[in-house]
Structures are given as C-alpha cells and as structure tokens.
Amino acid sequence: METVVSGIRPTGNLHLGNYFGAIRSFLDMQHSHNCYFFIADWHSLTTHPHPDNIVRNVRTILAEYLACGIDPEKATIYVQSDVPEALELYLYLNMNAYLGELERTTSFKEKARQQPDNVNAGLLTYPTLMAADILLHKAVKVPVGKDQEQNMEMARKFARRFNTIYGVDFFPEPASFSLGATAVKVPGLDGSGKMGKSEGNAIYLADDPKAISKKVMKAVTDAGPQEPNSIKPEPVENLFSMLRIVSSEEVYNHFDGLYNSCAIRYGDLKKQLAEDIVSFTAPIRERILEIQADEDYLDRVVREGAERARESAVRTVAEVRRIIGFR
Ligand code: AMP
Ligand code: TRP
Image 1 (spheres, helix red, strand yellow):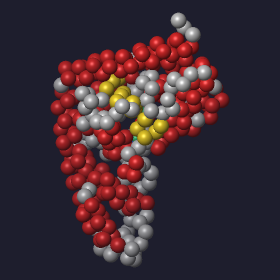
Image 2 (cartoon, rainbow, N blue to C red):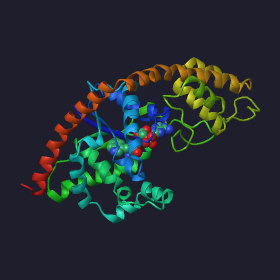
Image 3 (spheres, helix red, strand yellow):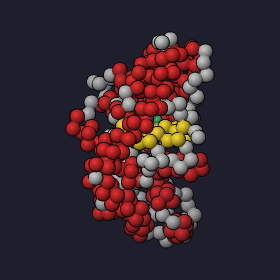
C-alpha cells in the first residue's frame, strides 16, 4: 500500500476551502492508502503564538478533522510535536539545504515581507521541516492544494539530494496529489480570489446557520446581466463556483438558466446557497461539538496516533543514521 502524508497548521478553524481543497482527498485516500495526517504545530511557531492558543488550536483542529470523517482506525492522526524523530531528520536535511535556495522560495519572501520584524530561521527552513514530515514516513503522495507546490518541489529536491550524496535509493520522491478532475479552488465570496483564513473571508465548518447566512447574503455581486448569455464577472462567477461545490446539479442549472435569460435575482441564489452550505456543514458542526466535549476520546486518538507515527519514524531515522555513518 502506498504511503500518504499531509498536514495542516493549527492556526484557526477549518473552513470550506480546507474541506474541499484538502480534507476531501484525505477522506478518499484513507480507505486505499497507508495515511498519516498530522497537525503541524511546529510549523505554526514561526509566528510565535501564545502557549494557551497552541493547545486550544490543536484540539480544535483535531476535533474538526475527526468530525469531517477522518477515521483514526484507518488513518494515523497525530500531532507533529509528539514525534520528535522528525526533528532529527530535519537536522540532517538542513545540512544539505542551502541558504540561497531557501531564501529564494516565494513563501519565504512573502512571509519576510508580511512579518519584517520576525524573519526567523524557522521561517527560512520551513521547507526542510515540511520535507522531514513527508520523508519521515517515506511517503509517495501528499494531498495538498496548489499553494504548496514550491514546498513540494523542495521536498523532492531534498530527497534526491540525500540519495545522491549517500549513493542510496532510500527516499522516494513525493508527488503532490489532488483528487484529479474534481480538485477545486474554493473562492471567497468577497469579490475575488480564494477563500482563506488570512483573507478574512472564510466560511467555517463550525459556523452556526445564522453566521453562514450572514456571510453568504453579504457576498459581492453586480447589477445583474445586461444581455442574455453574457460572461459572468468574477464575483458572480465565484458565487456560481460555490453553488457548483455545495449544491445539486439541478440547483446549479436552475440559477445558471436564470442568469442566462437575465431573470436572475441574486437574493434568491444567495438564500439557496446559504441553505445548501448549512445542510452540508450542520451535521459536521454537530459532530465537532460532540467530539470536542469528549476529552478522553481526543486524548486516546492523539496517544494512539503518536505511537503509530513513531513506529514508522523510528524505523526511518534508524536507517538514515546508518546511511549517514552513525553506527
Ligand atoms: P491553510 O489553511 O492555508 O493552512 O491550508 C491547509 C490546506 O487546505 C492546504 O492543503 C491548502 O492547499 C488547502 N486550502 C486552503 N484554502 C483553500 C481554498 N480556498 N481552495 C482549495 N484548497 C485550499
Ligand atoms: N505547509 C503546509 C500548509 O501550509 C502544512 C504542512 C506542513 C504540510 N508539513 C506538511 C502539508 C507536510 C503536507 C505535508 O498548508
């Protein structure tokens, strides 16, 4: 069975973008692959979060992962910082990672611009830690969104470089994975671009129906089509993309038809969209609340996950030590 690894940073609640961009692939793969899904709490330290927030955010995201349907009996779910072997591999990979290539990554340059007073070494070596996460389990597939492509390129480069330096064929090159034709970019409803936490336009899985309705009713539109079959401007196209993601084909076709005949009323479309988002998120939200209340269950999941993840990690690191020459 092929090994799959992916992680999400615990920086807030899961939103529809995370769900349709990444989690849905996780749900799909857990039945057919050897999956490791982890909460990347070390990665979140680059922004110096308060200790109380780390604990809270890790538990929140764990409960949300589980509520989405990631099954701890099928996949190994763990917290990154519970598996210290990754740090040893991170060190080895850093010895073969060069300042120039790390400085040139777009995510580093962007972060350096966003937080000019905190351009720390963890930010610089973010791609090596991510490579360590992946290579730790010798994963061949990594379900992530398009925004992670450069980090994935680095992970492949570090794997190849290790193999070349030591003359071994040890690490496989991990490929990015998305659910093929159904992979989506979930748009924001504020006019342009994608849905994201830092974009401030996210609809969260844990939002209550009122909050969802409020966000959808606020979505940016225009004065309406001026002639039949006209091209939809981006804000309107985004509403339709969202409709395609969460509503039935009939509903989509209904509103598309109204748009094309200039008979659309955006208020009706938004009302339907809000309803459909709520029917999708309501059961997940219910499970989030249930699971969050069950501390014992959450404790057991992370404990057992850490055990299983460490088995694989210890094996890889022992092998790496031998290859490097520590005997
Ligand atoms: P983030 O929330 O940015 O840490 O991303 C966690 C995962 O969700 C990554 O695999 C992203 O590629 C994916 N993701 C986040 N936002 C979106 C979006 N709007 N559309 C599709 N995928 C997304
Ligand atoms: N960098 C990823 C993100 O921001 C999170 C991440 C960390 C990750 N380590 C990983 C994803 C390993 C996949 C595999 O979304």
